[in-house]
Image 1 (cartoon, rainbow, N blue to C red):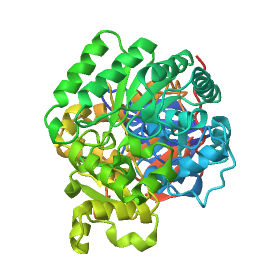
Image 2: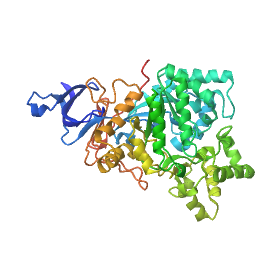
Image 3: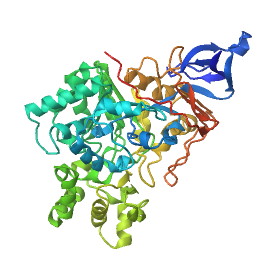
Length: 536
């Protein structure tokens, strides 16, 4: 007998087609048969070792988080309910150009400090890998959900060039291309960049185009956090479209938002730009989260020149009064490139996490609020936090616009990504709530998307971008990465005040045919593995 039959489910299959009622049979980690309208037809119903009554529940493919920052969380936290409870069965790691492979000892130490606000310092993780393949092998020891990996361009540049703001030499360029090729050969699905983060932002278009040509040769895709989401947003999007056109490389735009006051109501301009490129034959997708605030590190706002040389040099410059004043002027008057060319508004910068417990009182307040309580300027407070927490503070940046969020999520190439930073005392609620928030808020309550459309955005469409031939759809022969949810009650539990509250209305989640969420509770199953790039 087969392992499991899910009876009388309302199947939303990930294609965007209308739902249908069926019994779905699972065996050996795969969907082996789908019997539509079995009860009504009076036919012989499939039997299995276990039978699950899914009356009133939707059965869909597991959700694919196209932009995740669980690179260390998957290793240190076997439970990983933040994602498993949302129905996520696959995360894409290595985002924004900074992650932990490929590295040498020196590069790893600098990267760990640079992204401590995203992933924590990692003192509780055994970094027993250096290459992309070794990191994927580490994931294969058993994780809560599946994970794919993007080669991080900033880390590659740090390894081959260092943290200097200069063009790469021909030898360094060849080394970067070799590192990207090796990462793809070892199973990475593409290349990411963080072009407002050092050192990735020091790369010019010619350097990036060369790397994208390598990615295209291996059938991967390029996923940039581009050079501006603020004052130069449309120009930055156009730059990525043109760059990948020249490289003949598929493009996936990371957290494709239009933020800050200069971009209020301008999402249609972005979508028109993308439609023109798509109609001309470009291969483009994008991901977004269904919230208006962003989330990053406080250090990310600093001007790029302040980051040259790596984290230690940033701290040295911040400690020097004259240099710190120059940084302040760029932030508050000029508009630093790290802050997307827009002068920082300290009322919009909320501290969401610190790595030094002694600084916990700053969490949950904006920089200006904490400055007022201390009787000092906002810059003095921000500088204090950066120095005393060694660049560790994480922030929420309240700069988004709801009308832009809604317009972009309707687009024909949209997918879902949480951009979920799990670090800090008060992380962004998107880390625990993105996928049920789409289903509860934007499908059921607002009707921005139909249920079938939304599920396709979260499953079938991202699986196609990742070139996964047997995931992302409810189809015979496909892997049984599945979620069952109640469309009447599914909702994000996480809020800005209680960001780690788990969602409601998602009682069952299966990874590889095994229950990781059962009756609404996390099991001890670690069925996730690294999902490697399919050969061209």
